[in-house]
Amino acid sequence: MSIFNVISLGGGLALFLFGMNILASGMEKMSNGRAEKMLERMTGNIFFSILLGAGVTAVVQSSSLTTVVVVGMVNAGILKLQNAVGVIMGANIGTTVTGQILRLGDLENNANAGLIMQIVKPTTLAPMVSIVGIILLLMAGKNTMQKLVGETCLGFGILFQGMFAMEAAMEPLQQSETFRNVFASLQNPFLGVLAGAVVTGIIQSSSASIGILQALSSTGAITCSAAFPIIMGQNIGTCVTSLLSSIGANKNAKRAAMVHLYFNLIGTAIFLIGVYSINAAIGFSFWDDPITKGGIANFHTLFNIVTTCLLAPFYKGLAHLAEITVRESKKQPVEKAEISLATNPSEGEKNVLDPRFLSTPGLAIEQSHVVVQEMAQYALENFRLSYSLFRSYEPRIAQEIQKREHEIDVREDQLNNYLNHIGEGELTEPEQKDLTLLLRLILEFERIGDYAVNLLEKAEELSRAGVRFSDKALEELETICAAVERAVTMAADAFRDNDSVLAAKIEPLEETVDTMENLLKLRHIRRLKNGQCTIDAGLVFLEILTYIERVSDHCSNIAVYLIARKNGSKMLNRHEYITKMHKGETEDYKQQMQIFMDKYYNALPPEEA
Figure 1 (spheres, one colour):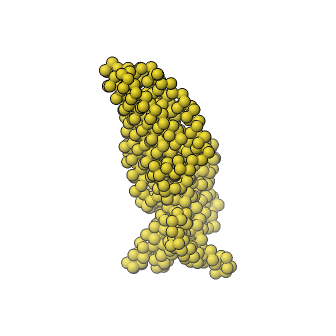
Figure 2 (cartoon, one colour):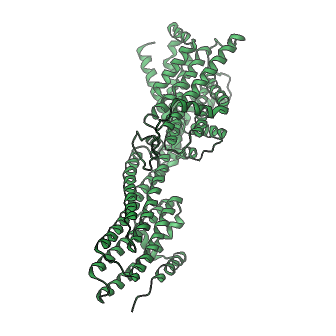
Figure 3 (cartoon, one colour):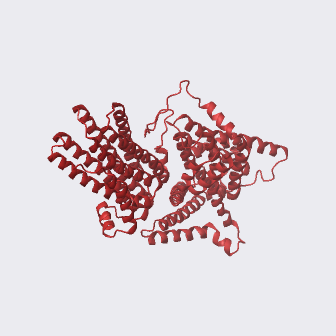
């Protein structure tokens, strides 16, 4: 084998891995994170967990990716350890799909294949699929799904071109006695397992290492007895990725990674004992025959299915074994409420914004939604408490508001950092729009929190000065604040439920608040002129009204962004949207406006004569 063959082999391997990466990336993007999101809806049913893990892995074409996501979910407290066991087992089955696709290469040796089989042969199918892929990419324009289908087809074609290049480069090895002797030595099962584990651990993909082994099988030098232990070792080697991803995670995440390792170690031990015992007792007729691509794919699938069937009833035992290996600290730390982006969070801390999710943007965005919802709830609670302080200032409540404001600020920083990292990856158009939406909403909810603190500061200022508003003024404030509180609640709920119908009701309420603010300012100016209110208290009252009205403005902004995202519109200018809405007021808009006017505007106390 010359240096040129080695170069060709390296180029073929590069094409193969690149094609596999494009294929997996395209499949994952087409799922738009839905496959990974399904893992969040796990039940305690082990068999359903296995099926789900297999299905997700078949879609994303990577058991490593699935297990890393599972480790992240366990670390974030989204999945329980026992639920994760079934998903990990299923992931091992799902990853065998790639080998079954690559076995199509065996059709090349079938000279009697009919027309359909001739078309299905990789030397025919791969170029055809590649041509379709490049045509779809060139003609896709702004059609995201067409681009992804084209990308996936192109990845499929490149994958097989890499396989062809590797096979061609290894042709001289067919006559090499040294090469045959190397693989003859691997008939020692322990050396074979070690070799498979090391190679797979280096490239961190069992699918890729299986593909390389299938390419090597074209030399005819690899026998079944040499291939079987290598395939078992490849399943162990793929655990390296999940073990590395668990570094810095909490104990349960480390246990999930250990479950993956134990599953493959125990499965390998069972198969080694079983296969070699049966061969010693009765002998396999194919034992010393050269193995084909199909034989490699079938054994890989058989190993994972049989191991899963044997160990599935003992999934709790696997979880317990992992718990024994990764023991709890003697002193349990207190669970923290704060979410951290650190790669080494404290034990017991729920790291919802886990960096492991960044490899699956759809899931990372979904987790960011959870944190933005927390911001929304904190902002709502702070606003509700802040205006209660004007009637009776309580330092304890003021401290609660400040604490929540700190949590809002922390989440804002974490989310901006996390979403920027998501944006650095390759996103589909819907994911990019979701990312933009979240970045806008973070700012809006954070500003609502800021205005709640402004109201707190005004209440504190009045309390220090010993000034108190009249009962009439307090009643006016509480009425307009109740309307704004309703707007904040509607904004938070509309975001949580992705409810554009509810979001559309916010603008009529915001317009009601504007009308109330104008009336109350006029009333208060008259009270100032009539000497019914001091200048200092009067100016504070007007500032408070401004803060309250601006909160409703931010709720209106949130509604506009949600409606635009739901409708797929690029129009995100709030004033443009409101102008259009008011120019063409519908009956529904007028009806909602009347409801809010009756409920809040007409509920204002009558002005004193």
